[in-house]
Length: 169
Image 1 (cartoon, one colour):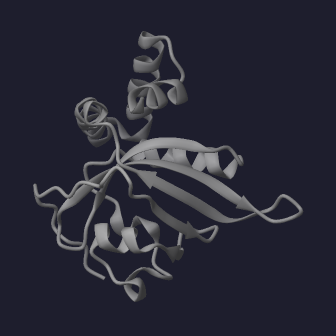
Image 2 (cartoon, helix red, strand yellow):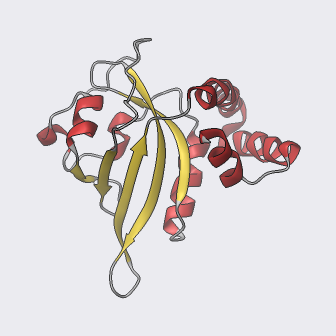
Image 3 (spheres, one colour):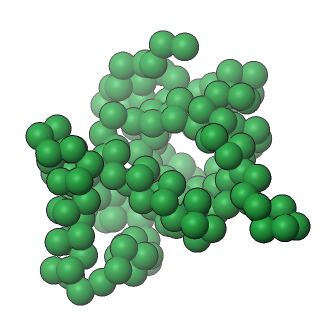
């Protein structure tokens, strides 16, 4: 499947909407709700069995997904502001909560994510932060972006979780 070219057209979630999806352990979509399909512009048959990265926007730093995978593989939840790419090239921001799904023995069998409308002020800040991180990744890789994020958190005197949750308010 060819990835669409990103445009500057934005779609915004409504306050009462929730995007829900589930993936297998490799990140392939096993479930998506109607709002996910509406916002992404894909039909269910185009999403099921595809990698969740089908909606990854090029403005998203790779380090955010590294943190995401590190956390959910450790069976820890993570919250993140994510800019997603729709089928038509437009985009939409979400405030995501991602967790591992485990079986009765505690083995990870997939992942579960619920996304809501993000705080607009948070998006203004994260757009700038993510742009800096992308620039750093271009020259120094994910490690450079991670150092930037770590320094930012240290400067603010907060953990990653404290930062994103406070921004969502």
